[in-house]
Length: 594
Image (tube, rainbow, N blue to C red; front, side):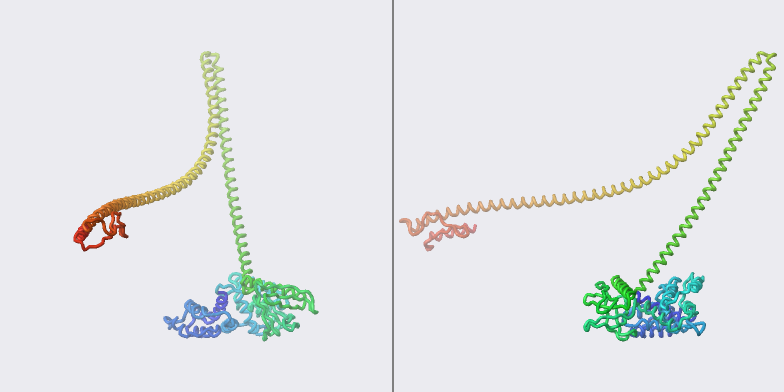
């Protein structure tokens, strides 16, 4: 899947370069050329008929990319076998096709060589996401530029990079590869640097990232047969450590397979070699020497990293680093979103607090107004009381003036005055009771609201308990139905077994009856046998008398005859020529037949 995604990135550039009108459609003739070159670059057998059959219904107009993707997946990408082709050739073909229409440097002085531009294009594709159109986020652009500047041993100009990244279009949608190449061609990063140094730095970063090389350089290696030391160019990848005769990597002298059974150890100085270390595998131990301690530390760390990647089934260090950077960006984005949500919630809380403060102020104003109204009412009551006292005093004065002339009326007036005083006191008491009743009514209303809320909560709880009770009742009814069904099945099974038992007993009775009949038959047969033996004995005596009137002759005696194999008595008869003996035998045969 990773190889397919990387190939699709390069093919996407080739396809979009053929889409001149930017409509998402390409003519069939151009797709034929593109497919033919992809067959050749990917080392796949050509299938010229497949494209015609796939787009048979669209012979007149252009073919859209939605229509080409199924063909690309089925007839090209599904047949790709990793290791049977050189991916750089595919990238170079797609770069050549897309650079002709999209890569147009503005000046000819500081223009990158075509090979360097191609390497930067490949690095851009490697670091870009799998979303189309392909763009690079600003963090990845800064990471790539830092790698190139570090390879050139210069510091990255943060001001120029910030000016380029801080553009609004870059922040919103990312950076395209052509904008990135235009920025590099401006020469802001390579001021005062020779072109050869820039080319070497780009090539080094390209081999490290796109070539999947963790580290490379010269080391001294000890031979296995001659045990002499030779200087070799080592190239470390996640699963292998190749060593060559020279830096051009034309003649490979060997390969060390790395895995979970390998380890790296630092060795002490011996045989005049310093900064030694070894790589141990299951079969061999490879001894090497670095130029200095720093290089030895870098090589041992790099080899341990390669072994870790091999154990974790990861094929590329920079893909792993890319995933980690993406996770860090996503984590920063999540934190930023969480912070914004927290600020928003704080703003909402502040707004709620302000609204509550406003409501509190309104309540305070209402309370002040109520107090003012109560004071006014108290003043009115006092005024009424004063007026009433003044009236009473006037009446008293009038009564005092009329006391001399009318004593009887004065007494009546005094009684009337006393009654009015009692009435005033009653009114004052009634007013106090009314105020107390008003306060009690207010407290009762507050208590009633509390009781209503508690009653609502109790109703909700009662409803939930009722639902739970109904659910339990339904489960109980289901269980009762299930128990009744099982009880009915058991009863039916008991009835079936009782019927089978009755049938077995009936058959047993039949067997017993037949056995009794057989016993009776056997007893009858035995009685017949005894009767027959007695008859034979009697007839033997008669025959003996008839044949030998003078007495017994031969071996005939009155002994009990012997039984044969069938249970019939066996009697030895001297001869059957006598007529009486023949008659006896004929009668015996007839009885047997009966």
